[in-house]
Length: 362
Image (cartoon, rainbow, N blue to C red; front, side):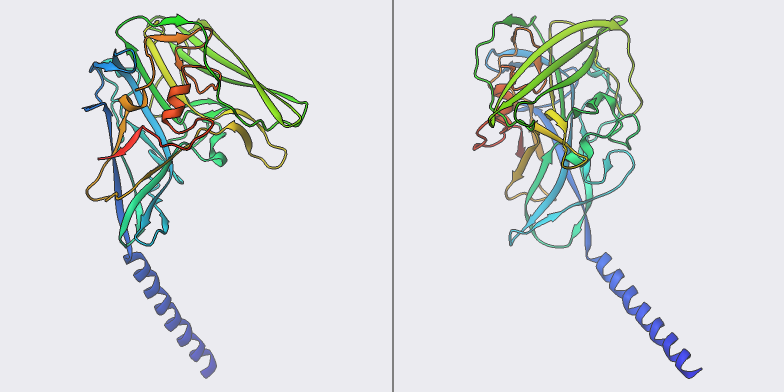
């Protein structure tokens, strides 16, 4: 009887100690909100606003959509330790280690979206002194090939999804130019890449996205990629086609479908390409992962903001022209000359020894 009571006392004392440890650990966490702002050059991004002198052709553009996913958000302390931000699981904008930033508000030129916007990433970190911020624009491989029709929010946006094999659009940037976009012949060097096919095998990969026009029809842009490897050296061929079909609506979620079927629409969808199922795991292997690694030094969460400058991203692009036999803009194809300056400004070229030019500290 005495032994039983003694054991109970020890158990209660242990529970109190453990409970105190939990409370202490919880009190040492602090909430952080990392704020984002969108710009076109020196001006803030706003639906319905026209921006002049963008790109090498000094084009006048009107944005119609701007959304992107970030993941693996972390702060770096004074000793150089990378501390992941534990994202708030709000059931809408953030899931696991992925967050959606959405700058379109469903008005003016952005009327294919909705009124809700999202301009911050919210979570917790252990209390401490942090000097830098890092994150990835994109979705981790383990989540990238989920089915958006049944995925949790914010991965349930079919407007941010190519297909099961291609995965998600990490970045969706769309705009209209003041003048019609002219078709030009191809004359560029493609970006080298690695193929994951076995020697002698070829893999056909399809990324398809629907662009609805103002009428009751929509345009489907299909990019078919074939990678062939011989003796360890890969070659890559791509053909693109565009055709119209009946009106097609998407699933629910934050956004709707595109509304541009004219020759003034310049569309940039960044995502992984050259994807095929891996025999080594249940994941897909993608020749071009296209995840953008971002690190901002001397970033103070309480004082600084992450700026996303569309003007800088498009600084080396001629928005008044488009390579023949490709969709207007860039659908992440390494064989599309219009993608080359964009991928280089995201530090995704064949020799990524530079820096990305989309995100900056403000």
